[in-house]
Every structure is written in C-alpha cells, then in structure tokens.
Amino acid sequence: MRRLIRQFVRIETVAVLVTAWLAGALGLGLAAAAGAVPTVALMALGPLLGGLLLLIRHSLDLASRIGNLAGETTRTLDTARRAEAGIGKVQAEIKQTFRQLEALQNLNAMLPVNAVVPATRGWAASPDLLVVLVDLVITERPSLVVECGSGASTLWLALAMRRSRIDGRIIALDHDPVFGGKTRDLLARHDVLDIAEVRDAPLESFSLDGQTYSWYARRAWEDLAGIDLLFVDGPPANTGHQARYPALPLLGGSLSPVATAVLDDLIVPDMQKVLRLWLDAYPDFGSEILPLEKQAAILRRS
Image (cartoon, rainbow, N blue to C red; front, side, top):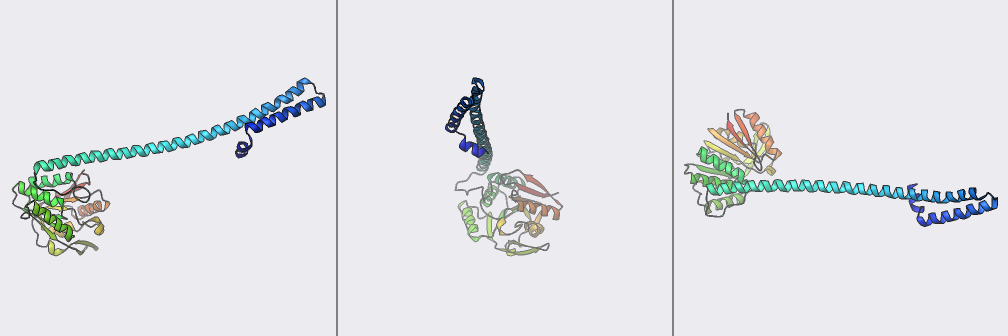
C-alpha cells in the first residue's frame, strides 16, 4: 500500500482527480437539480479527499525521512564510538611509550654507554623490564645469571655487572645461531665478552610429566650450577606449546638457594599457563606479577 501511494499520489495526479471530481459533482448536481447546497457540498468533498491523500503521502515521506535519519544517527554514533575507542587506544599507547622512554632514560642514567645499543620492545625486552633486571643485578649481585634467549637484555645485564664491579658472569642460551652471533657481536662492541657468553643451543625434545617439549640442548646448560638469577625470555612461543615451561624443571636443580627467576611476556596466554604450572609443581616458590608493558613475574622461594 505504501508503495502504491508513493507511486500514484502526486500533486499533479491529485490536481487532475480533484478537477475531475469538481466537474463531475457540478454536472451531477445540475442534472439532478439537487440545488446549490448539496452540489457545493459534493464538490467540496473532492478537495478534502485530495488533501487527505496528499497528507497521507506527506506523512509517509516524513516517516521515511525520520527512519533514514535514525539510521544515519545510529551510524554516526557507531562511528563516534569507534573513534572514541581508537582515541583511547592512542592515549594508552602514548602513555605506555612515555613510560618506556622514562625507563630508557633511567637505564642510560644508571649505565652510560659509548656505543650503539639495540632496539627494545617488540620481540626484545621492553625498557621497563630491563630496568627491573638491572636493578636485580645491582641489588642482589648474582654470581651467575642464566638467560633463556639473548639480545638487548644480555647486553644491559652485562653492563650492570661491569658498572657495579660484580664478580659474576652471564650465560645466554639461544636456539638461533644467527641471532646468537649478532648478540655476540653486540657484546664485543661494548667490550663485555669477558662477562657475558652466548651459547648456541639448538632445540631438542624433552619428556616432562608425560609431555614432550622442545627446549635448549642439554649440552649447552648441563655444566651450569649455582644460578642466582634466571631470566626466562625464550624460546619463542611459536616454537611449541608452553615453550618456556622446561626452564624450571630442567634448571631447578642448578638454582642457588637464594635464586630469583623472572618470566617475561605474561600477556601471552601460553606464558600464563607456564606460570601456573610452575607454581603448582613447585609450591616452595612464590610469585609477584609486575605490571609492565608485557607483564612479567618474579619468582622466589618462600
């Protein structure tokens, strides 16, 4: 019905119909000798019906425009909400970037360098985590630091040891010989190869609690003992399920009684699962979650 009214009820059509009605009513009144009053009343009915039709057509057009306006309003509100969410994300990223710049400034203040330092964030450790690691080295003065993975953190840990005149060493395990070689070049540029060592450790299979995991080759770490600080930042999550779980089961016996372990990347669900498995399997360890960019946990014996 709406479609028919919109198609046929137009001003031109109504004008023709009203004119025809007036002529017909006048002719009928004269032919029937109905008198002036009935004839005029009958003729007036035509314009009234025409006006009613035009009013109905106008009401339908108005309803359609209101419907379109409601749709446009909804789309505008949706766009505004998306823009607000986008602005919120930008603001959060700006805030996070400012925090990382502050942390990087603290690093440079604590450990002045005279050579190029590697990029942070992304795959590498974020500056806020590096500050935590450096502070652990300075305050706890570990004799042996073992790092699962190598890169920017290896350098900053070595610089902290040298700056604080700590009689210790850093052993970093890396499954990627190319990346491990780049880390060694970086350590050489900063003249800390006497403190930090990167060991090539291709992944091999280990069976733990009925599960098979890929982790660093045994030959790369079986001689280690008295680990005071264990930093678990590898292997990458894409190398297998719960890729970092073997760190504590395999190196737990090599930890010193006062050892501290740090697990990075807790924003990744797989790493959250690793932490829960560790705490279930080793109830003598307690954990503290650090609200860093990628979140991290510090584990110590209770």
